Image (cartoon, rainbow, N blue to C red):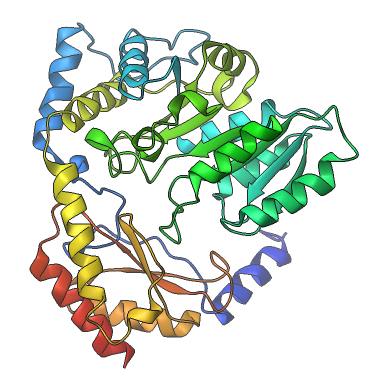
Length: 382
């Protein structure tokens, strides 16, 4: 009797031949230029002990949530966290999901209905694509950050469907490119057409805006967005996510988002960490430090002979394009030997020919480390 289908083994072998086989790595002591922990909160002792205090203050001595939020798992830290998040992000309501993946799957599988239309940037996260594929709406992708292509496709698909609700989907900061759309133009267009704009702010919160409130609030667009997704696993150093929007949106997701309804709630200590992390954001200089590191990195790149290999970015994510899985893996391995953790992003995660080094900057990276890293990349690329 076979232990697994032959197609499973064949798929794995193909990945190996394409130098795209993935392995789970171990935590390392290398200099971190790869994690999403932009502000160092994941390792913050201050946040760790504050989380403990929050549990004690609320007399919570409990490990698990015991069930979904609609059954037995809606412990009181949820209300505290959601009210604090809504206030911080200047929105009417917030609803916490177990992860950014769950939040996106919940939104896109439940809100757009049959014959509705979703127009999404071709580079949106896999969780958005998966949510769309689980729903019944018609979906069309437009070229990355290309408003003219969005207009072209929208005109083509809406001319014959006057009754459709139309949702435009993009990200504040794209995780594999580090760039952002022209929000002002896109939002104005969506409002003119009566479309609903949904923005994933996973890599913007903690980096942009006052106290890291995000790019949408930095541009004062929070009252004009149908839905925002903020995640806690990046700059906030915690776990989970929240959908921001109206009370009606919150009520709808509680009733219809299957990834919310049919899953065990987050344990109390996870929510305590989220609350502590948001408090830390408002009383810390780490966001300012991070932005100084970003500006320093940009200035250093301009001095390098290989600057044309970098994608333009004002975020904490910077990418050096090195075509070919084998080539980019080799450079990443050489950096590792020099003590730097910089991940190679391979196809099919990105398009063939667009393989890259993905450099994540942090408030705790020193200017000396940044300069040394860029010197080494410059040397290895040559």
